[in-house]
Length: 153
Image (cartoon, rainbow, N blue to C red; front, side, top):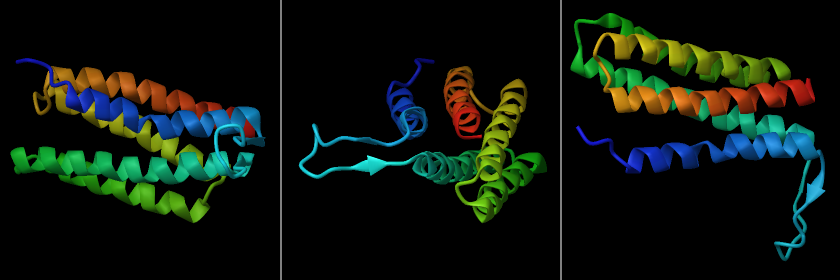
């Protein structure tokens, strides 16, 4: 089977907010007045806000992928359960909004989602191209979130 191109593009573009959050954390406050008519200033708190809120959305999205796997394998309840665990973890992390603990919880949720996808790949529930893509993008996202934790921690 030919590896689809569009999911790769969308996946890598979807990682850009995590990279942006890390850049905000690295540079603290900086302005983009050279590029914009209005001055835009970011703070380190914003780096947690960007990484955490976007991370929560994506973890819930990854839970939706597990729900989709469940529809193909309805007798295998573990993917239904994984879907809900990921979505609820994302939601619960927001009670620790834009904090070290909240970003840590989202980082751990990404690791859990990768572990679940590894299991799904080994069970033949997801194709090889998707597993390879998930591994690569997860490393980028987890590294960016870990960077946020180290810089802001």
